[in-house]
Image (cartoon, rainbow, N blue to C red; front, side, top):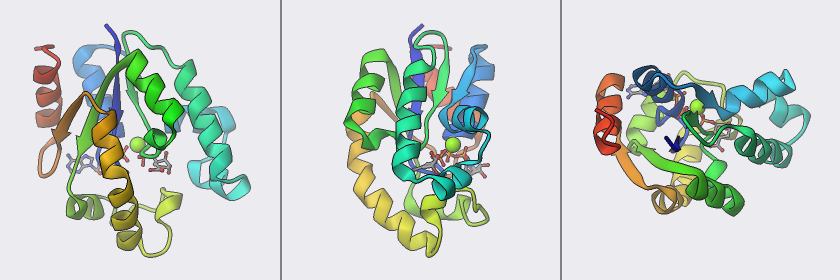
Length: 167
Ligand SMILES: Nc1ncnc2c1ncn2[C@@H]1O[C@H](COP(=O)(O)OP(=O)(O)O)[C@@H](O)[C@H]1O
Ligand SMILES: O=C(O)C1=C[C@@H](OP(=O)(O)O)[C@@H](O)[C@H](O)C1
Ligand SMILES: [Mg+2]
């Protein structure tokens, strides 16, 4: 089975849904952020502070290309689609599912979260600005779009399984 890549904005549920999807499909799950943090022995926040975003993006591309392209679920960081090279790799190596959630839902889910360096400061303003820039990119990069707004994790996993004829 070709690897399933989950893309979408911060807070769309990629990491959470991906873990549940991997359990449902009995395949390993690779979260690009988690792989990077383990390799660097630094949190994403610390990588941005001690190095910079460009350093993180180089790591992200390298890690993406090291993760198996068969029989796995890969949960990506929200900015991975911003690099054309990454979009080409995703498209060539797996099935790309865009986990959509509307802006208000994203804001709600990330209200208490301080783990995303790009949302430091006025979180809502940053979300509106970044999401506005990226929404067309997610849509263009995806094979399928799943709306996660107001849905439970298992409901989203079920929708993905139907989408991919897994059930
Ligand atoms: N469908 C959902 N409904 C409600 N909360 C969700 C849903 N999916 C994820 N969350 C919550 O939103 C936050 C971000 O989820 P996460 O999986 O880290 O998203 P991403 O990896 O896309 O940034 C977490 O607190 C998670 O529990
Ligand atoms: O959208 C982005 O640029 C980012 C999303 C994050 O992952 P999540 O989408 O899992 O939060 C993480 O890769 C980093 O903070 C950058
Ligand atoms: Mg994540």
